[in-house]
Length: 218
Image 1 (tube, rainbow, N blue to C red):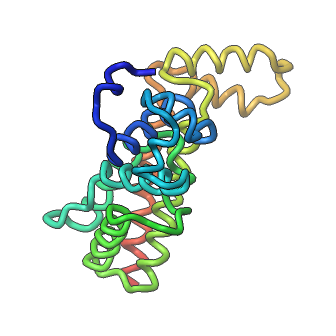
Image 2: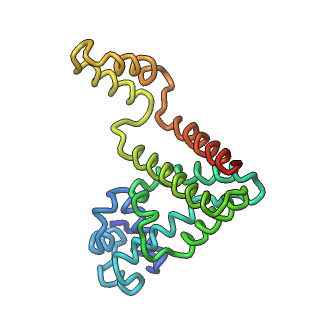
Image 3: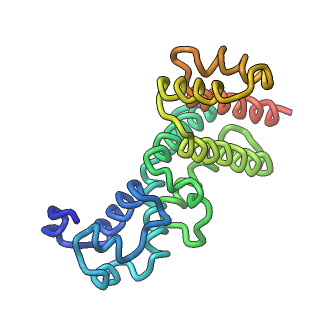
């Protein structure tokens, strides 16, 4: 229980921000009205005065996450604008690892979600993509961003030293010579100083944007 929160007058924004903090710490599956009330230092019934159901709490949480992601800037070329938006999205989703599966699954999107989708579509259309290609582009780009963030959230390692230690532990447990390509790859990639799984994000994103540019030029 957070004693500082007890002295704050409860409102919808504080409930949603508290829910995000709790989900960041424990995961979305553990979020219940009772646990959130305990986290905020209030009685469960008091939450219903501000947000009448857990579904509406989750809707509000997702909408707040959308407010934290940069919109594609209007003053940049569409590829640069989209890249900035996607890099921002990955950073935000890394802070909220519970969010990726929920970003496009809510049936009652809030104003920030709708504003974000509108801005992304505007960016793609401004880049000269047809409506059909814009639909493909949006689906492919966000599948990549959400999927990459989701995979990062579930990796069994953090920084370079952790990766190296885990890779050595896994390789030492395997029969010698049975997986030669995996062993060679691990030695030449994962065990090298400075290796980062996350470095592949922008490389992959550039490939997607380049492919969309070529498709739009046909």
